[in-house]
Image 1 (cartoon, rainbow, N blue to C red):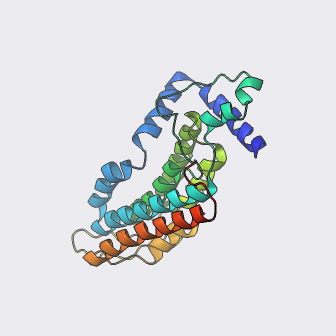
Image 2 (cartoon, rainbow, N blue to C red):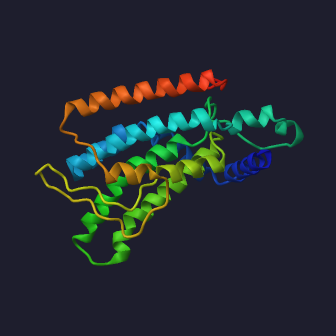
Image 3 (cartoon, rainbow, N blue to C red):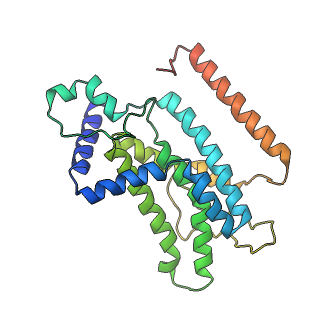
Length: 254
C-alpha cells in the first residue's frame, strides 16, 4: 500500500509542477464544485429541466453522502498531506509540494466524496440533457456529448483533489466509479409542466449499483412519510453501524 501511496504523491508533484493558470483552475474546481454545489448550483439547474429530475438529484445526493460516510468509516484511507509526514517520506525525499487552504482535510479519505457525490447526483441531469438533445438530432455523437462532458468533469475533479493533496489517485477513482450511474433510465416525470423524459443512456456507464439502483427504483416523492422514514432510517442505520464497529474494536474516530 505504501508503494501505491508514494506513486500518488509523485502524481501530485507532477500536477503541481503545471502552469500557474492550471493551478487556479484546479483550486476553483475543488473549492466551488464540492458536494454543497449539488444543492446550490445543480439542483436549481435541474429544476429548470424537470421537477422530477431535480428531486432525483436531491435524493441521489442524499444517499451518496450517507454511503460515502459509511464507506469512509470502514475503508479508512490516508490523506496525502498527512501521510507524507507520518510515513517519513518527507524526510527521505525532497518533495516540491505546496499546501493550499483546502489541503488540510482530516478524517478518512477513501472514497473521495467530491467525486462520488458529484458523479452520482449529476447522472439524472446528464441523462435528461441527452434526451433533450435527441429531440433535435439523430446524431449519436451529439447525444453522447452530455456523457462525455460528465466524464471530463469527473476526471478534472479527481485531478483537482490530487493536486491539493486531499486524496490519492486510487481514492478519486473509487469515488468516481462508486458515484457513476448505471444504464437504466429514470421514469417519466409525474409533473405536467414541461416534462422532459429522461433517456436510456446510449452506452452503459461503469460503476457500482448506487446510481443504477436509485434510478431503477425511484421513490414516491409525493409522500411526506417517505422523507421522514428515509431520514430516520439513515440516522438509525448510521448509528447502528457505528455502534457495531465500535463494539468490534474498530476505532472509527481515528
